[in-house]
Amino acid sequence: STWGHLTLMRASIAITLLALALCAAAKVYFQEDFNGKWQDRWVVPSKWKAASELGEWVHTAGDFYGDAEKSKGIKTGNDARHYGLSAKFPEFSNEGKDLILQFTVANQQNIDCGGGYFKLLPTGFDQDSFGGDSPYHIMFGPDHCGPTHRVHAILTYKGENKLVKREIPADTDRFTHLYTLHIKPDNTYVVSIDGKEKQSGTIEADWDMLPAKEIKDPSKSKPADWVDEAMIDDPTDVKPADWDSIPEMIADADATRPDDWDDELDGAWEAPQIPNPAYKGQWQAKKIANPDYKGPWVHPMIPNPDYHPDPSLYKFSNIGGIGIEIWQVKAGSVFDNIIVTDSASEAEAHAKAHFHDLIAAEKAMFDKVEAAKREAEEASRKAAEEAAAAAEGDDHEGKKRDC
Image 1 (cartoon, rainbow, N blue to C red):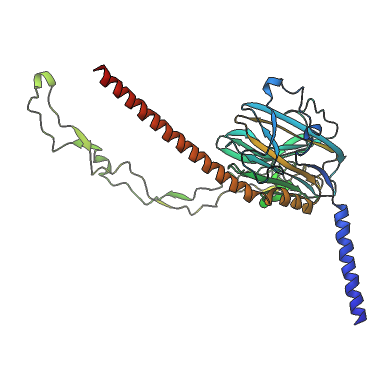
Image 2: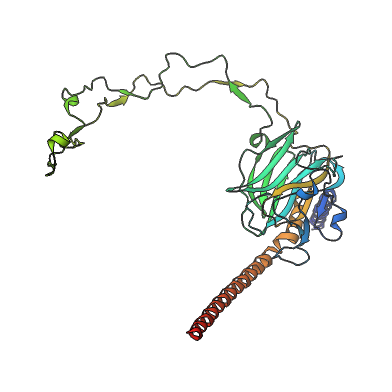
């Protein structure tokens, strides 16, 4: 009917307008793919460390990649160095909105010890002095040291840096990986790697920001007559009268006196002692269930008077920059594809274009690079063997001539 047709049209228009409104509301606060004049947008701190302690950032796609141009990022270029870099952007607050920090990192060097995390920074920070002691709002990303490979997720609350309590494993291979931290205005969060959720929960439960909701009642203590022994000795069990008469060690009945034994020199011969197979050990009464057992005593809990819920744990009021300050023993990590946004769809679209659409090609190139490396190593080995054989032949001929 005409009325039904009009209703469908109106619904379609409403959905379209809603979608447009959502798109218009989505905000990308910062985005960096390290193309073009990226060095004009970033500052290396000049007052943080001596120049000799700082490593060089190299603009490259690395040894293997999905696309020669799209995959270009910044790589740590020197072993055993500190690395610092920061960029500013217009101040914003995530109050009432989602906050997503996302980036990629490829540890192509088989990282053994080093960081790979970014920090969201407060407005007005000093880029020349930015370093490990600079205040920050959020620190997020992988960290590797020896056998420990974890994703750091640190949120600042009332001036203190709070590390997430539940450990999130970080990837340890040499490929590019996508790290995403999504903080929501309902005080929940999601950490994803390569677009797959690895951990989620509430900020209150997974960070030690607030006092405990309950505490042990200080006015209560375990009663003096509380019985918490589940088992007791059987009072009817009696030790046998001959129990202690059985010795632990006895003379070895199979031992014989050596033929060369001299009583005057060696003393009177005695058979060596061996464990007594009849010895039963120290006697212990059998155990029975304690009829007076009350179970483990549980301390009564009461509401904590110091606990006050905070619906704004997620909120940061003056986000105005992003930075990275790390130490790496073995350099070679490629950082790229940073986005800071309030839109999950924007982050997903960015991830698709800069990670998901390229990772298969990167892995295929890695296989080719590794195959070529193996072929070169095999050719080098054969050449060395042939050279050694030829040298041995020349030496043999020389000795024949000398003869």
